[in-house]
Length: 333
Ligand code: KDG
Image (cartoon, rainbow, N blue to C red; front, side, top):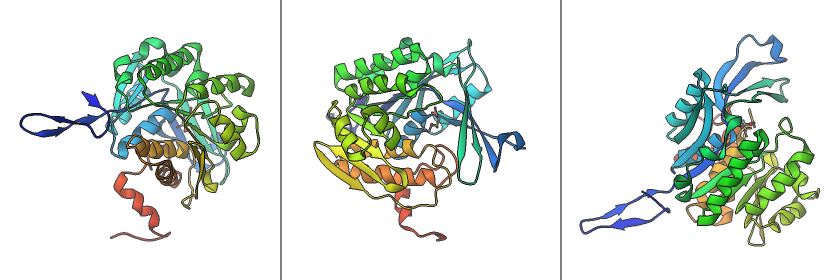
């Protein structure tokens, strides 16, 4: 049985701590092929094989910080599908994945085009993950969630995936489960004109909204960061967080604006750092911590992720957060 965090069952014999409620998230996780060399992909001699998915990245990050998480998705009946399921499950996250024999597991490829610029290519049209549908939702799990986390990627994948997201939102809202939304605008998946009304609509459902600078401007139609954050708050969310990478983050909660300085790191791969931030923030939010603490831990988790190559591999465990206090080149023995 899942109960909200911190609840205990009192029996005649003992006070038994209960399993805390999980974060529930729904989305597509892809096989990730990465070229370890710098330069055009056509010259790459090797590709490493991993997995990537904004929602499963958050689930893994949340679990590493000591809390249960459930990822709901769809994979093909293929080796990449097995890798996705095994990897997420291997990280301790519960997996509810439909095995879709009618489509393949999608693929994402990362190319380090220059020392500074990375490019991402998708092979995911018609993929199993994009065929998510309303029937894939485990309503009972959703009703017992500590938080539902969704991203703007899923509604961009297909009509059925979009319907799945809105149906999950309805279930969560009916029972008062907080809804976390990260815009994660992907311009390879949909145009600004298509995305803006959907992301605005999603914002109205959300308790917490996470956005980067460009996508926040896209949805709010305002260029000033603080002004658009206020504008997004006025659509309904109690917490709006703007993730600005190396410039730190800004949170607006209950009309109060909070600034969090970045934790400086040697950034090797920023893909997935935003998901790490969300995982860190939510790990504190569900524990009832103040917005400033949520921002701080979010920022720390983002810094960890950016300093490691891979979309989620560098996510921190709770007792590793203090490592950010060490300087470059330090060795802990
Ligand atoms: O936020 C990182 C994600 O973008 C990445 O892990 C893969 O979900 C992904 C996507 O659609 O780009």
